[in-house]
Structures are given as structure tokens and as C-alpha cells.
Length: 144
Image 1 (cartoon, rainbow, N blue to C red):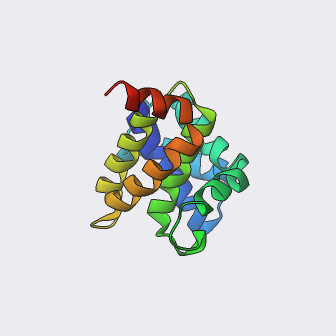
Image 2 (cartoon, rainbow, N blue to C red; image 1 turned 90 degrees about the vertical axis):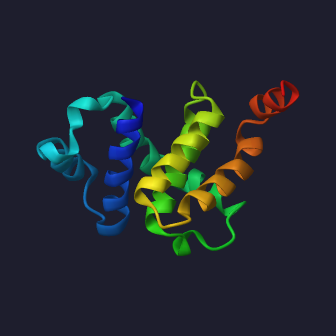
């Protein structure tokens, strides 16, 4: 359910980044097209991601700038949307374990991203996790 919500949010945020369409129009398109199988997604989680990422975009991009090897504008648009979802989840959805956030980002990058995009997403989210979830990351490392 949440994986599907993330996948749909990724596609919607990608469209928003590329075309600048209103989020409500993008959501309506996804909901009306049976190809997207919107009914199998967690609709509330989808909307939270779709609204939350743009609402926190400046904060999200500031976090990304700390660890990116290039300017935000130079990151592949699919990978950028995945990273933005990941940062949003790490900062706003502390109920979602950071390892889940990273894994979901990797999986989306394997499906939607460039050939080695998943490696890039993994590296960036892995660098951000100790900054954004230090207590959780440290507890996880001690528990190994």
C-alpha cells in the first residue's frame, strides 16, 4: 500500500518538477487513469507525500545540498524526486524507520531510474540518515 503510494507520488512529483502543473491536476490524472491502479495505494500517504514534498521543498533541498556531489538542478529528475521523498520521510515521518526509507528509495530507483541510479540514491540517503536520524542510526549501529 505505502510502496504503491510512494511510486505514484514519485510519478506525480516528477511531472510537477518537469512541467510545473498544479498538483491537483496531476493527482486527478493519476486517479482517473486505470493504468496507475490508484485503488491499491494508501491514498492518504500518497497525498501526504504529494503535498508535503513541495511544502517543505526549500528545507529538503538544503539537506540535499549538504551531501550532493553536484547542484540540485543537475541531479537526474527521477533521482531528485526519489531523494526528495526520502528526505521528506526522514524529516517528517519519523514513524518510518530510516532503513525502510533508504530501501524504498533504492527500489524506486531500480524501477524508474537510470541504470545505476539506485546506487546514487543509496549513497545520498545513506549519508543523510546520520544527520537526520542520528539517534536511530546510532542505536542501529550499536545493535549490530
